[in-house]
Length: 255
Ligand SMILES: [Zn+2]
Image 1 (spheres, helix red, strand yellow):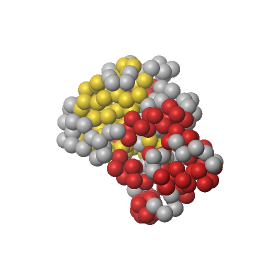
Image 2 (cartoon, rainbow, N blue to C red; image 1 turned 120 degrees about the vertical axis):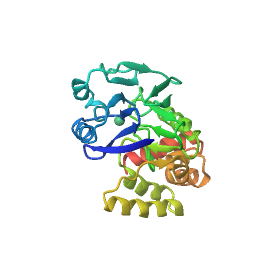
Image 3 (cartoon, rainbow, N blue to C red; image 1 turned 45 degrees about the vertical axis):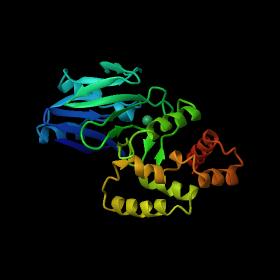
């Protein structure tokens, strides 16, 4: 039995909670109040916290959670967050609540950014913080555009049926931009309508899957000729993937 539940935080963050028969783990608790009351109400035993990167909206709740239970393990990258107990690197393997995770380093949004991937309970699952979003990707704050492009390339190589749990509900605005990049892509138009309906009802649009992203996320489609041509027509940049990625990311920043 594995259950993955979103806890809403701030305006548009998701704190992902996984529960199995042996306990619960949580990803990126930017704040603690909704999480702690959910754990209490459902009598869940939190065993570990997983951090993807140092930003406050992903880490701000750690100390409060630890103040209630000091024995919780905190996994995360090697960064300035003192409460991380187990610092991870690319390729590290972790087992918690019966699930094996592999660590993938994906710098770009921040230099410390990592993702957690597992494929031992049904469909593969990925927790990727602010690197890959449904229909989009994170801003490049600390790394370079080519680092971010390379990191997304690593995620692109995962199994297509991977379920992707992102850190924010940005899907609708991302797809609005995707429509601008590929006006003739019917899959994007259809997805935009479906996502609008979900958001009107207040339903999360996540998880997404890699398969859906490959068909409708412009940041994973820099190898597609229509995308390259569109960027060339608009910005006269080279049509190689890295330059196309940089142009699309900068275009989105001011969209
Ligand atoms: Zn972030």
